[in-house]
Length: 368
Image (cartoon, rainbow, N blue to C red; front, side):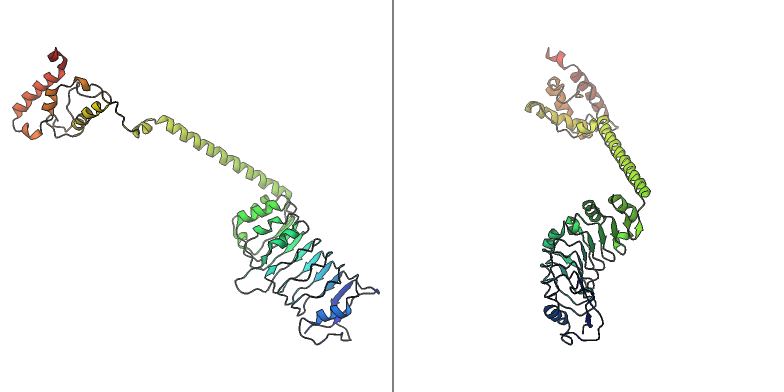
């Protein structure tokens, strides 16, 4: 049940109305919770054209009704009621301060007509477990030029990127929420060029390393952070330190890039190693394969005891395909004999080896 009501004024045309104590019960007393104020507004206050401030906090109001007459209203106090939905405020063209803290509002909406609204207080809403306070994008767009003070304390809010459009904001109170993203906070603060008061205590982001220093560097206009004054000397020191670290990182990166380029230039064989083989003609490819086998497989007749190729210098290829035209048919047939036919008789092996060397070393003389 709502408390008795008194009009606080000494003039014939009241400018302020608030709930309080009086000896005489006004009309509407004893009705259901939330309806008393509606009845009173409709029957008794519609003639108060100059009313500018209304105090209706700490009642049982569930809905906002019948405020169309108060077109000169500038301050409206509705804290600690049972309001679940913001509505019927579009006619209050001159409203500059709206207090809705301690209600059951889940979405901040239907404030598009309040072009003069400077302060919005929606802190500590009694929401179901796990839910958070949301903002209608249309409302945010309508308030981006006028809103200067926003109070969203204790509303389980974990993202504030959508609030970046409020470019004229100079005071932001968001204590005891779930804000944790430093990069998101940096982006939002870059959009709030006029912000001088910021309250974030009680959020997970405050547990980050050097939280206060980072916030001070992010916002050049900030004067008070979490209730403590920001010293200009400290800000300048932090800005200089940030510039020094960025320059140092840039130099280190350039040095690493230069070393990588130098390493590639000093080791060109690593590039040639992966180059594919190219043969100039099919004929060279046919002769290339047997020579490769002779130089790589140690179990042929011309292999030495150390299992290395013992080809005479005349058969060693100087480069890919060089010297192939000088190989005769007889030395090639002799060299391709299996090793088991030569190892039974050491004398035979020694004699044939000396003969083959003479035949191969002077192939041009035989042809002449």
